[in-house]
Length: 465
Ligand SMILES: [Fe+2]
Image (cartoon, rainbow, N blue to C red; front, side, top):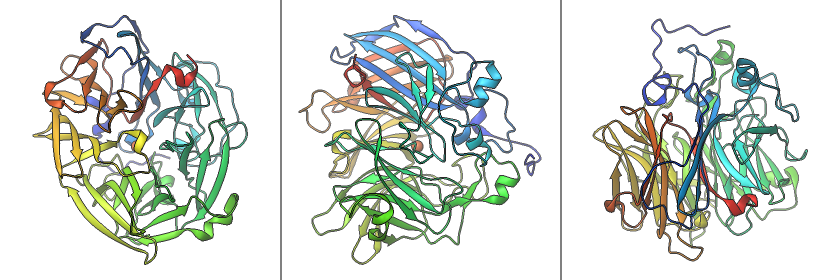
């Protein structure tokens, strides 16, 4: 069944900077302007939606396009290669006549994007392997160093069928913490992926509906997610919408604070969850959270007043803004402080501070319609920016410290930039303390890269190179 409620389908996520590319390419010895910091040995990886076949624009949602991973390998100051590869979900395999990807069978019978096991959201290294992750009942994919899809995985049989697109790494233990959801579950599953690549802890937290839980946050005491208000819609699923979720105005929206030091494994800890009610707001991405001395928790998130009410294609209905949520686990109340009204997304911090107090945040922003990299100083309430230029679109920037002991913003901001008029792309590397100086290095990629979701700098040593 197809949803055809709109007479003249318009879907911005299939054109312009979002338009998919058709070819997988490999380019060696990329041209570089400036100097790549020689200590950067590894890969800058990025994944995003890239529909392999024409989609119905009326029902296609940006979140559900087949995954394509892009990578640049740096070694000793040189850009050795660029590669882009489809993440081989069932639809990609069928469309391109590829051999089936081995691995366990995943949860089934759900909405279309679950059935097609699209993996398009994030990339991490864990247990010496490179992983591509997605959410909502989709199993992780293991990738080779050269970005070929190797296998679906359930983490050696330890995963309950659904992982997350947005785990956060505890900088002390190296473990990945994530919140998993599935359209047919009445709970959110908090899971911890050990450095051995196996789930070592799970807490199933009952919730009122079937909310999207795209991101989460850690503090030293809590693992946190927002319960609501974007909720599974069986009616939309019946009509064939790729992403059958909508804003549910009746949803009792709350922050869930799951104690990290509760009693035992399994669902026993769910009763220890603290709930903080909040006025309905949608938060897909969280910058970070940390415990405050008075027992409350501060959580910085990108929030929306309205989305998935009228437009099922993507988050188009209200501008984003940056809020600090002060959660009180004793009273169950939430106070919201507006940190910045300007639209911004794809928040990143220095990952060494995950769960601890951060000062700086890095965002994709816009100014006069043009794309810019935004650095927020949240202690001072000031910001700096770097404009990518007309027709050029920057993606999520990742921060790489200059050394293990470097100060919070003493390091490199690395991001992919899509140059729409030129039909090409770049990786730009800036020093995070001096955006005004512009890139220290620009790596030229002879291939357009659609605007994507997330990724990471994966140092070679993380994968045993
Ligand atoms: Fe995301």
